Image (cartoon, rainbow, N blue to C red; front, side, top):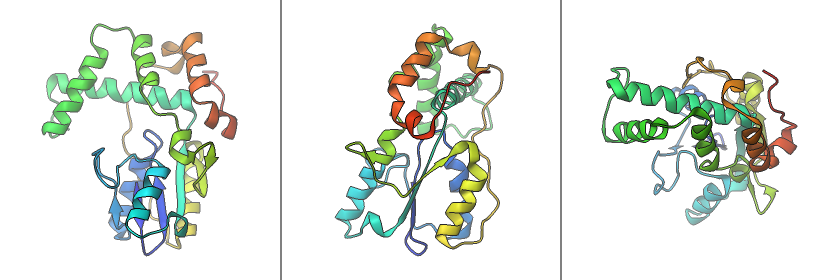
Length: 218
């Protein structure tokens, strides 16, 4: 979650939809007043929902509607697959304490979680666990089945969506960073089966209907 009081915009950052790219692109500009923290108990959580942001702003005497609210969604089958690849890569790095990561307490905790997630389990079981334990995208941008953000961007068109956000915020678009890339050892078709495809369809029916997403053919 990013909040700019001067430029009057808020980003509701759904995990694995390019939120790190937004953060790394906007922070050097000095226009961000609040950066969501990776702590569930924080006033503004890094991946907090629009409703949570709305409620916290109200407690501080601010109105969510005074800001242009922006979020990014992604084809849900690819999004869960991205989680899978990220956790797998992190588990592999934790095994050898890869020097590309500074292994403080939060990183070690994450490493242990990822390692346990992949321990003695086949890929389909792992993916099923990820799907079942991840918040659907519609929970981030809606409340009581009503959309409460101003714009729902598409990850698949991220560059143009980024330009649109900059235009609404009245800032010159900086270079869009691309962070959190994961490996490409596996393909979507190698991990999904019909049951998992249907599980995602049922869980993510809100965003699937909104953006007409379909399971990728390859």
